[in-house]
Length: 474
Image (cartoon, rainbow, N blue to C red; front, side, top):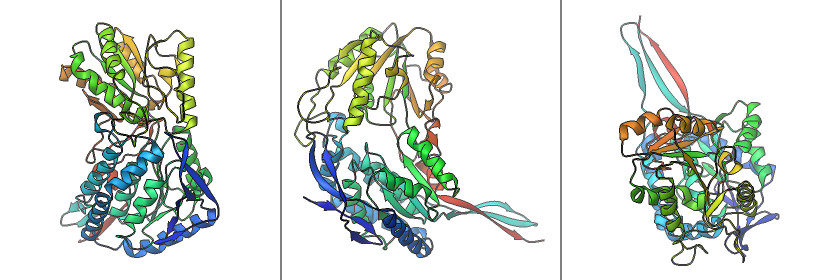
């Protein structure tokens, strides 16, 4: 049985205590990981602090070059990384619409390449006879990264690459359910980076709490659930850490009656069920005008009936399992509550037999706000379809939710769609699409969906402090 090690100060460290990593498609052990202790976290932070002294002084061109070299390493190990993702997370290698493990690894390369084109230029705020004032962006120090189990490698890249690009050093702690691809990525990155710039500790939730409260860490970047994010915010308060929190979403899509149903149905299906619905910014509440409600339900049902579920390492698989038993139980419970309250199941709705945490792609009609399936983030392969008649009412309904990550409007009338989008309370709105995150566009949530943004220039700057330099001339 392969045991994956911690990586601290460029060295692999194995521990006596380990934990198993399961394949959610088979429930078999894929590998074992070393279980870090608080002392290991201290060692990793100390290594990152030592490395920061020199890494923070490295010029931007060198950092850009190193990030491109990391992208080269990911490309050279593409198949290995994709296979690790499929085995630990469950998403197929290719998957429906090509949105599988290969897509995730390819996205990692693309994000590295784009980030390596960015810069932090000095901004001149004043330059006259009285004086000159410059705004400089300075690295923070050690960044603590805590990543989830749904897109394990992609989100690690989203956290790590802008951090080291801006001169920071990193201690990353991946989900204990999906640590393998992240450990392998850190191994590869350490072939490029100086020792201590990027360290990884693996273990259960207690390790994350040590990172959150550690006095040697200046920023926490976390992607995951809202309750955990709130706990991290409390834990970081005593040391006044900077925070970037990308938390839960319950994204609403509003479909206007003027759409071409045949054209939009595949897009809605793909962006609702991407990664079997286990994506923060997936479309999770679909509001459809009564004039086309039945037609769109039928079109989505036909697509769902034609897809294939199974072990993502096999050929021709569109969708894999739910990643873990606890999440499967949540999906099943929400389906059962909806059924008990009169919901109509167009497809799916029953847990599948055999090994693995499989749940069929499920479409549910005759539900509305007030039903837990609509009000709560299901984070799985189940989509409620809600009929509406009045546009003002449905905008209010879509906003009447504690989450505010993303939303979408579907219409042929772009100006009308833009007007509706302007009224939606969420960090990102897509028109005739959904969940289309891009490396050059800031992404983040409002309300209970988080703090701060990732990506683009604004996301890069979240890894810096501002220093104003005043030069008096008079």
